[in-house]
Image 1 (spheres, one colour):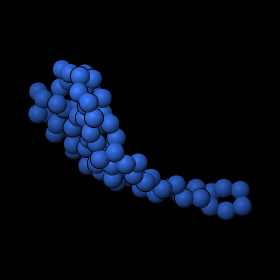
Image 2 (image 1 turned 90 degrees about the horizontal axis):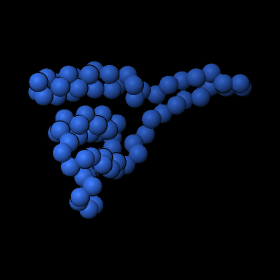
Image 3 (image 1 turned 60 degrees about the vertical axis):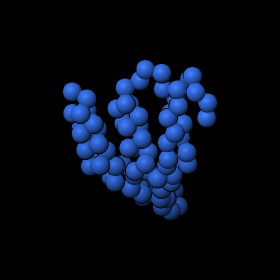
Length: 79
């Protein structure tokens, strides 16, 4: 059910997040490069008026782990 989706999504994000967001070192011509993932800021999640709550939790959990904040919004509300 819905609670199973919450548990699966949150568990996957918690397990995979640190590895996905870790700095990457790469060889380049004449040196090395580091790819570093930095927070973007506030992300607006536009959802239909009848969206299931797990959609907000799914994108919010991953973005909060990355250092961002999220603001859910439906088309019939204003920001």
